[in-house]
Length: 229
Image 1 (cartoon, helix red, strand yellow):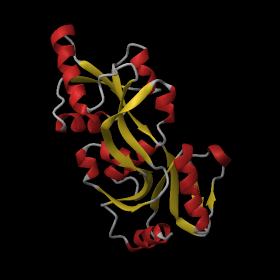
Image 2 (cartoon, one colour; image 1 turned 90 degrees about the vertical axis):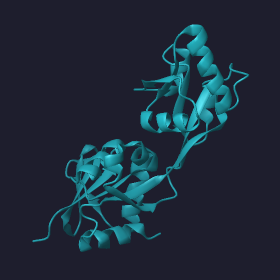
Image 3 (cartoon, one colour; image 1 turned 45 degrees about the vertical axis):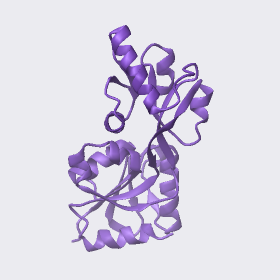
């Protein structure tokens, strides 16, 4: 009896579409009994493979705890996860799709702020004059904190974003944000601009494997097939 291979595919968005395309190209026929909204699928002719549709962030978590063997997610989400989770996952393939960059964006009105060094100055002004810390709205607290600290910016407070981060500077929730963007158009449309040296991380869609099962021959074979262009 072959052991079950668990694969995680993003449940929505562009990434899901691109990943499903890979399976299609490899003639791996995904079947969901309950149609489009089904969260589980099987692959025709491969009884030992189980596919689960999950949020892209959760795929990284599940690879980390070993309940998934293979998974597809964004490189940004892997790098945002806790270090003990990252240590349990290997990136097997970076695909050319889902390309985006995590950036620091500030309101257009902040004319004298162009670089991280300017931001550091503003952060100190906030602390000295307003007696509060500069607030940064983000869905990427770990990467944001790490980046700002590495650039010498220490006087800030992170605000967890649950929705449209680009609204935060204009609703009094935060002064600046970090956000993932592919074209920068949404930021521009919301009167935000990216700092000149405000690029935190480049991301794209990846196939990842749990280090727990990476020596499994069947999983290796499947991964190899899904890696081929």
